[in-house]
Amino acid sequence: MGESKEELTIYAGEAHNTGFVTQLADQLSELVTGRITAEDLNTTVAALTPGDRHRAKLRDLGIILDHYEAEIGPYATNASLLSGLQQVMRNQDLSHTFIYLNDFNVFSASETGLVETMIETAAEVTVSLVLDKPYPAAPPVAPNLFLPAGRLYHRLYQKAKTMKVPIRLDRFAKPRPLSEGMKHLADWWQTSTNLQPQAPAQTAQNKEVELAVATDPYHELRTVARQIYQAVRQGARYRDF
Image (cartoon, rainbow, N blue to C red; front, top):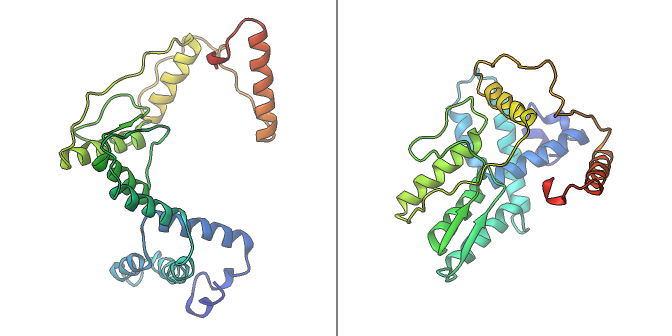
């Protein structure tokens, strides 16, 4: 920021603000991973009206991103590594490779490009998502608890169709036995997020769900581990947790 300080307006006085610089670095990294360039920002700024309140900030961000792109050029970044991996996969024979993706609800532009290359080149790509139902024809509409995963499902499904890649029938996890308290909590969470009418509470208290506050992650982990250990000593199984 020091080199471009004279070009900046909104962010000119933030060069020595450590907290701001840290947040800015994270944002720049996200922009690069999302394949948003300084040129993209400049194009957006040019399309905004002169009085738009976002214009000055986006202009400054475009200037900083331009310098950032020049500085990181020779170095390996998450975005460049993903791009490199994508290129390597295109040049490899993956016709006998089966890929499984789990614990993702959202992909950045760089990650999306990599996954699309997997779909195009690998023998099979299986993606595990937490959803209430499939969304092949249209993505879910907000508000929806499963909005990110539903959009990802729809996007990958449509991309596979465009590529003319065979799509297997959906497979669903077996229903897990839940206590009445957890069922009520799950129903409340979904209806609350979806802004649906809430059913009248059957009981004044849900004794099967306990809320706790920890001072930091270490104490949270330690307390949970102790409770799991005590439950196992009383006959529970580790896989129950």
